[in-house]
Length: 71
Image 1 (spheres, rainbow, N blue to C red):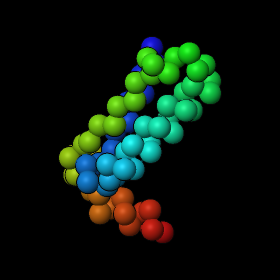
Image 2 (cartoon, rainbow, N blue to C red):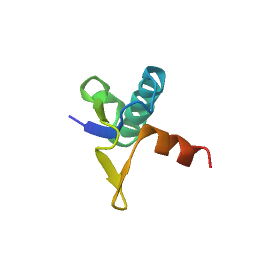
Image 3 (cartoon, rainbow, N blue to C red):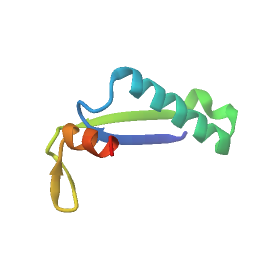
Image 4 (cartoon, rainbow, N blue to C red):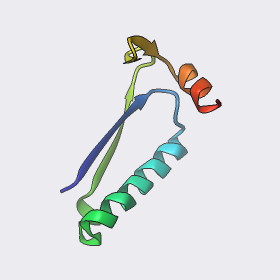
């Protein structure tokens, strides 16, 4: 039973983006492991509070991610 756990900063992805992420990751897993596992492939998108996620020793927020994405 494949399980993919994706953690991200809360407030960055919309519910529709999370839905797209779940669908796309599921398809990627099935491309490797086989279509027969669709019904038992789990994808969890877990939100982490802004500021509770650090990169390079610095806390990151959803605003920081938006700045990076718009480079």
